[in-house]
Image (spheres, rainbow, N blue to C red):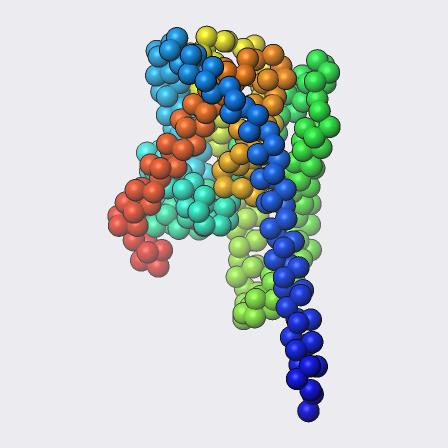
Length: 353
């Protein structure tokens, strides 16, 4: 029999790795929160000046910004609708908007991008959409949107290089984000070109994960999903990508126009170069920051970029806060009642024809 001291040592040695693993998982979040606080707190001293800007705001431009933001969600609804239409019946744009808002709120509090995709898949399937269309509608919208954001961010970084205003932190952040997107895209392209190898690789990864989670594993599920992904990819390559790209462009374009109109409302219209520079990179960093909605990262990075490009602090703080309320917080709050609505008005997937 082992002594009590030996037993305690073994138990302690088992707890240390678990503690280290837990700290390792939280460390990136803590670092990003620290960066967000570092970037955002200095801007709070300008709130008093921002109140003076509010007194002279052009409220017609604010109303127009809200209307344009609504159009951005029409683009999101069209994006999901066009992807889901691969497996008839067609999902309406209105239903696509409702699903987008509700799923975004779900992803904010449960699972991030994975929770968002799972919610979209469930609700599109519950509306009669086939598995292929539901799978595309759940995962591809973020891919299309992020691709456009990456293009805008690259344009903004190029503008910063031209005006010699790119900090080391911004360069590192954009470089890591771009590398992540390029890596993910490269894996997808390679997988489509080497389908048997890619399917076998995914099967091994899924089996390892199931073993780690101490769950049973059925490889049929993995092969079925990959086959559906490849089939959907073939549909997109044959011309089915045009409508989703249009929806994503409408979504991102109207969202950026919302920010532009808020600058006009604050009495400080910015040039297209400055607008692009402060828009694409912060939103892209927010999407890969592991923080819900990129809270703190988006606001802090936008403030640093626009201030560095000569926008007054009072205007920057007011515009960014108004933009985030219109484009993020209000849709998020509206999404939670829509979750309840969808849960009550849709059938379980198993009952869907």
